[in-house]
Amino acid sequence: MSRTIIDVYVLQSVPPSNLNRDDTGSPKTAIYGGVRRARVSSQAWKRAVRLAFPTLVDRSELGERTKRVGESLAARLKALDPSLSDEAASVLAADAFAASGLAKAEKKKGDVRDVESGYLLFLSRRQLDNIAAATLEAHRAGEALDKSRFKALANTDHSIDIALFGRMVADMADINVDAACQVAHAISVHAVDNEFDYFTAVDDRKADASETGAGMIGTVEFNSSTLYRYATLDVDALHRTLGDGNATRSAVEAFLTAFVRSMPTGKQNTFAHRTLPDAVLVRMRDSQPINLVGAFETPIRETHTAGRVELAAAALAKHTVAVENAFGERPTASWVTQVGEKTAVLADLGKAVSLGELVNGVGEHVALALGQPA
Image (cartoon, rainbow, N blue to C red; front, top):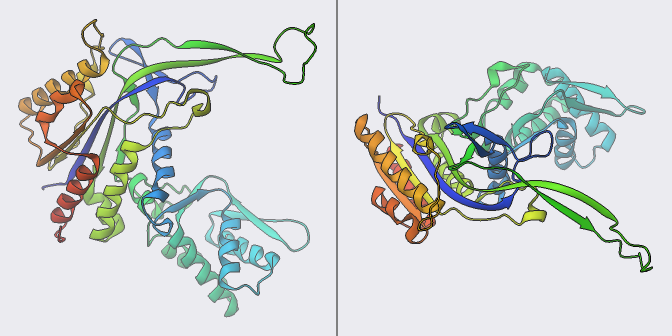
């Protein structure tokens, strides 16, 4: 059965930074190809993508992931019926979630109750709006919002980010949503050694010259790297969850833009590490996703005539052709956005365009694949 798969490959050079810390505050790393690489977890980059979405699509198309579900629902109840007191809205919200079995109502002072789930609960804003409307309707009818009704409302009108990244609800597994998108941990194409920056801070009010020394000293760990990033998107799965061709195209275009342009914010005030990719390669396939990380199993070693970006682009181009020839894989469409001569070799792998043209081109192909007008 033919499928519509979108593979996204990114090469991106990042200066000294600490994008994604481990439990000790050190930049995350991984062993690959026998050497230690810089690593940025998939979760960190997916978070950056989600934070970029509000600038790309209307907030009503997005979800809200929080433990403080009672607070969110109470605010919606108040908006629907301003005559409700804060206390009454809080009690109604608590009762609704308690009836669903997803969270427990906790009595606060007086008659006020609030509710928190035991884990982050991911609901679309439309789902929360629908639950609020149903809760108020049931309250006016002197009834309680039962679990089956809640479940039905929580399993329709999924948001773009829920459809892309999925949802797991341990206490109500039948409203789980399978993720249409998978994001790999970004790794450096070369070996890295973390370094330490020793810093001092001066006390501005220490005017006495006889008092020497810093007001504070410390260290921060960092590395610099050329990253290989990969994500794959199953358009058919995305369409099944969203149920609408226009919404699916919008989700694909928003994801491509956000994934390419976003950046995790770890220690950004210290390092100002925001860069844009050196190259973006997008392959549309009808068979299966293909991660081309094998291009860097042998770590890149820069020379006096060529840096890491240039050598990484050449390795990626060579490996792409080799893998696709060996397995008879032919992309149904391909686009390349690249910067300068260092990554020019990748232009042979697809239509060379700007990022905006790439996103629009992919969107048109998605529309055609779903039987929609381009």
